[in-house]
Image (cartoon, rainbow, N blue to C red; front, side):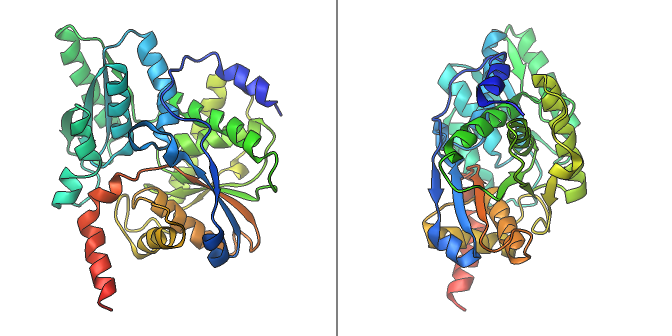
Length: 350
């Protein structure tokens, strides 16, 4: 077990650049709490500030620390068409006066006008990103390889590119933002009732793994439930375990996260990444109509649907104090405007 100061000291070895508003608040959610039979708090990482905020801003403070240290003038990033990560990189690049290449992968079988032209894709264009496409949605190595090809073309033109990679096997730089978030949370929760469970979206795994490593390093043994947004629970659990060990090695920590610490649930994943199902739609409506809280349909809506499932199944016991990490993604709601409007209209006619 480490103190917050000791863990902060380890993180201070890594360059950062300020991008967001921290600490983010923790809000009570009394109406949702009543419906779920728990005491629910929401960590508002949708309020990190830059270009609609979100969890990626914490991660990018570390990545752009490296970008600036390297003297780069261009960054490259890859993600889904409605990727919050891509939009956040484009925003950070604009803020810091850098060029940005945004590669959009064909991950979701949705091609209506809202999905292709609105939400994060609109913001990428407003932010001045140079966009590219990649035809495969489940080929992280291939997507990264194409980024390096674009970077090499830029290098030949006299630019100084820096690739922010997507696939596993790269240093988990971004995850350091959520190790730091664990320190922030520990300080915020000192004066509050003990949290019985944390619930987070689990996609690339950097937010989930970074938070888990940070909490365990501080001696906080509360379960962290990662709700799968892209992969089956067993596959995601392996990814999180590898990420945790890579983070520990990067920081210089001994192995503190055990296999029993890695909790993943894919109960609300079907039919797959970025595809709306009844549980996610109901969760988005529940949050909006109970607390005025906006959740997106890809990450936070699915994660909250997973929380609802865990509470209903008793995995999270009645009366528990639960903290939900709201990782942002609000612009993606507009990318799903056509899909959501069809459901809303159908619901109003029943």
